Image (cartoon, rainbow over all chains, first blue to last red; front, side, top):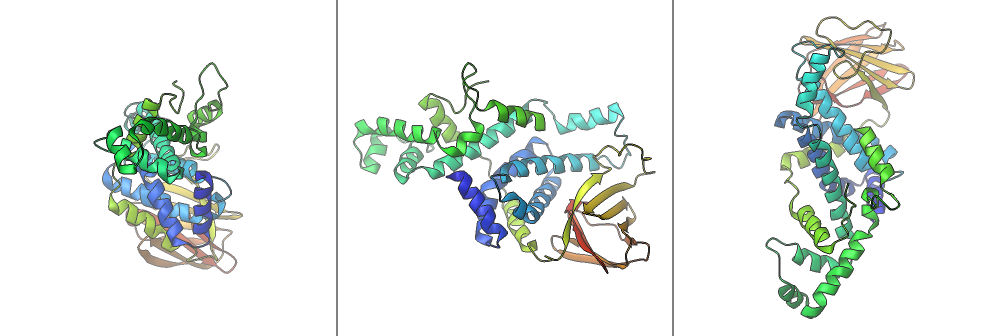
Length: 212
Length: 154
């Protein structure tokens, strides 16, 4: 399962496995970048934050391998470093951290839209989780869903022909594969139950909201 | 708030499509920098990591302390009982190790070391203005050896 695989990669990288590290970089740099983009840094600052975050991650591998802590750690660290560089950009004019006008100014630059960045971040996390869940599906499901989500999408008829399954079975197979995808443990941290039911995702949502 | 993942297959398929296609491309330089960071793993395994615990650029001053004067930026790093305090001005970096011990401090970027200076008897050291990008200071004294967390000093 995906938690294990990320945890396994972190553990392997902390023992010196460079290929495991490269896979972590491939998997999570889009996440780091999505956080950076939500802060509106210029490209040089963005590159500095990205480099800082990964240099720190190397030093924290040993502490991050006990649980699936890496994604959350990357998000927190990236946000922190974005904030630092945004503040630094204003250092030519000394600022007073207790001065509301200065803080308001930085705040305006930090969050151009007070709502959007968090939504972007949540969407980025969910998309990352979906990609991980997809990677955990049986090969047959991956093949079918890859065809059906291709750009441009492939018709049931053509998907069936390519995979050698009767066109009448494509729909039911898609439904079974999406069911597997929906229940993949990789999505568990992001599940938000119906408001009327057991809200298993509420704690996390609250925690995420509180951390931001 | 809508439940997630969506219960409708069409909606889930659409999200999967967006996830598989929609992620913005990551510039190769970002990937390269991230991969290269691994090169610093255990380069100095004997150095204890001193975490960044205060940065006047973005943290409120601790209660009871007077704000540093002028445009200096101050940072504090801690590794157990060892504290590295650094003040960055346009003209350079001055720092102090505590407890004060003689030794040497090396500064490096991700490309490698760029400066090495002595630490005096009361723990002070002085360096030139830092380059852009993340920097790490490695302090080796007669009694301890620490590396600060990577951070952009300017």
